Image 1 (tube, helix red, strand yellow):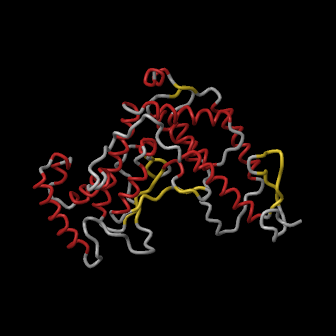
Image 2 (image 1 turned 30 degrees about the vertical axis):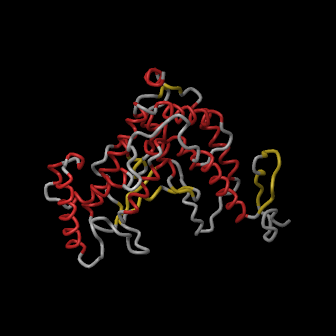
Image 3 (image 1 turned 135 degrees about the vertical axis):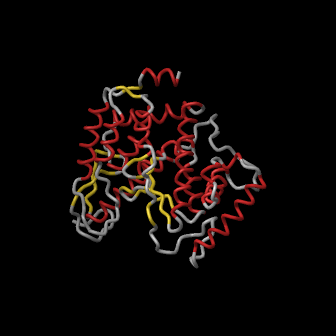
Length: 328
C-alpha cells in the first residue's frame, strides 16, 4: 500500500487524521515525521500568536519617538558601549549619566573596540558575526537559578509582556544571537535561550546582565501591572495539563515554563519549583534535525501516554492563596 500523503513510498505506519482521532492515514516514515513537525508548529502558532489581551498595555520598556531606536535596543547598545568604559562598573545605570557623558563614553568605547578587534572588523555597536561562525555560549555563572532553564536563560516574563522578539532583534543588531532551545523543529521551546557571541566576552557579559535585568523587570510588571496576563498564562497551562489528550515533549516544556515562574513566586499549591524544574530538565527534547534518519514509531501513543501522566500529576495542582490575593 502506498503512502496516503506522498503516494510514492510504501506505507509503514498509521497516524490519526489531523483534527479527527477516529480515522487514520497510512503513511511512510518520512511523511509521518514531517506531519508531526507540521502539527507541532501549528500548535505553536496557535498558542504563541495570541498577543497581549485587549485592554492591556506593555509598560516594562515603554515606547519612544518614531525616529529613535526602541528602548530595549538603545539600552543594550548603551550597555555594550559602557562595557569598554574603565569606570563602567562604578557608574552603574546608564540612565543616570548626562548626555555629554554618554557621548564621550560612546566615542571612547568605539575607539577601544576598534583596538580590541585587531582586524576583525567589529565595532562596539556590534556587526554581524562571521558567516557560519556558531559563536561561543556566554557563561551564566552569575545568573540567579530562577532565570536558568536547561542551561539557558528562561525568558518567560519577556514572552508574556511581548518584549521577547524585541530582545532577540536587539541582540542580533549587536552581532550576537539569542539561540533558542530546539525541540521537534521548533526554536525557543519553554522560551529558553542561550546568548552566543563571537567577539569580546566583556561585551557579551554586559549584554547578558542587561537581558537578565529586563527579564526581572518583565516579571515584576506581570505581578504589578499585568496580573491578568500572568493569571491567564498559569490557568491556561494548568487547564491544558489537566485535560489534554496528546502532549509532545516540546509542548509539555512550553506549558511548564509559566508554571515554573509561578512556582518561584509561590503562586502554586500541589507542586513546587524544584519538581517542575526537574520535569523540564528530564524531558527528552528532540532537536528535529532528522540527520540520523531515526524515527519514533507510534508517536501518537507516546504523546497520549505523556498526556495521561500530566493529567494525573496536575489534577490537584491549583493556584495558591497568595495567587488568589495577587489576582483578585
